[in-house]
Length: 302
Image (tube, rainbow, N blue to C red; front, side, top):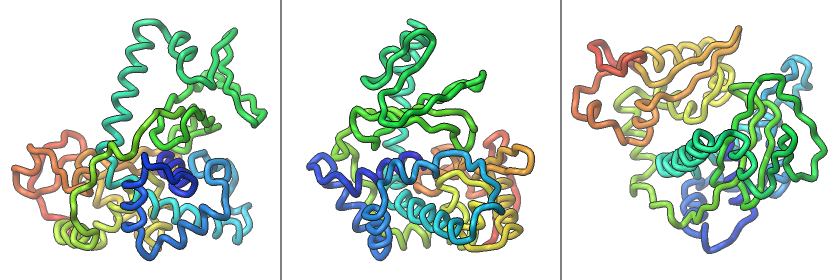
């Protein structure tokens, strides 16, 4: 979701040649959803106003007025639509570039220590007297209390920018997001395949209902998130998640009463139609979610 929020900001504010190809692709892919995205971009300062999408919602949902809840849900749906159009088709390339950045930073930390890593992380970040300072217009102090800090590179965050997420939604740990320079025109164009054809192919494999649920989890979410995205009941969303998990397409992390669902590499590859060789060359059977091995059994039905 973080790259989707930052990319939405870039989509609405930037008209540079470095992103012309990506902008054109996203507009075409959004189609009838383009006006909804345009409305969000025009009404909100995307990064400060939508940053709450990345953070843990500490408020009791029952205490939030229905109108506010409905507006928040609609905003989340628009960001999810934009993610499907502007991030997911390029995700394998984006992920590869982010992994390179993480590897470089990891080697720096191993070789020279964490303090050296933090001191040279970003022009807006300084490390002094055991305090990490981020140059910002917002006056905010965060005490880690042993929780740690997630360092998260972003390709779509505006250059020379850092964003501090007070409590990242999944891990509930503070996260420092820092920009990594990128010429979006360096991204290779996704395969020329219509979204309709792709949807039909996926639906033919796992069934229309399962395909919709799998696409809805292209961005990790709780059972409630899945329910909202599909417009179905919580029990129905739970059933869909169970089938996808048993097929090895998602994993589920439970924290008390909350279940967070995330695509496995196999699930993501299925969405991208880039199945790993060992899976693509074998029979089309669901995999074991623990070992990744294929197993006999009925295919899930939509």
